[in-house]
Length: 286
Ligand code: ATR
Image 1 (cartoon, protein in one colour):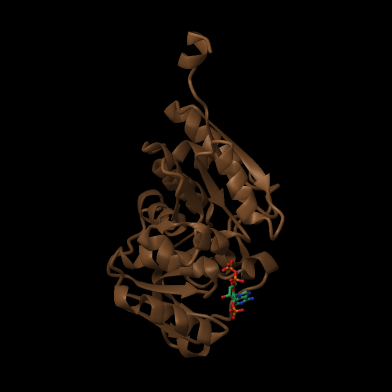
Image 2 (tube, helix red, strand yellow):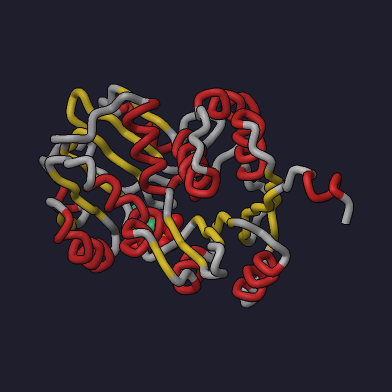
């Protein structure tokens, strides 16, 4: 082996795994982070067949891969495969970031919730502490954001879901961590909230959760975890019903990536230019 080869800079390998994966923006985001912070990495996207996830991870690790982002439908399986997990991943029941440790073990984190919190607090400058939060939906997306939201000390989190038993279950899981309870849509009549977070998949179906018209206080904010090149149906509805400001989830997408990047590389990229760049080029609803 020549000296030249020994001293050649080593490119660390990362990827996002999912199914489907074609439209993932993660390679674009992480490549931009790497350029900005001068990190020598390559980041690809890998389509994984359902049933082939554990094998795909093993292959990636065996070829020297350093870490992975995991997306639909493998986040729960990644949670099971991770041998150590952060507290936020543990409670989320899902993992979106894997790090392969020097001893060969796999560490799992979930950066979705902290990504949302960082977007809301640092990019949008909306307050969370002391506020009444309404979380719409009780699926995986909702569960992933609850602990990081509770850590910001809101006055309360109300989880509302069509299937109330699922909201009840989440409220039970997170009750030790803050003031959180479940409700039906019908029970929201005559109530108002300071921030609404839409973690349902309703925007993907071009429909709306059945919210009362008076749910948003006069200085209310509304956040849709989906993102789109134009206002989502939920954002349009919120503006029409008194919201002072609304946002889609593009900032969350970039912030969750930044948190994964920080875990892997111990360096924090500046997310603003990447959010602006994506805003110019994104099309459709995701
Ligand atoms: P994800 O992993 O994206 O959260 P999921 O686990 O399938 O996906 O959960 C989807 C969530 O959106 C659920 O809370 C679902 O409500 P139900 O549990 O009652 O089915 C919610 N949802 C989907 N479409 C909705 C709609 N049109 N109105 C209100 N809630 C909706």
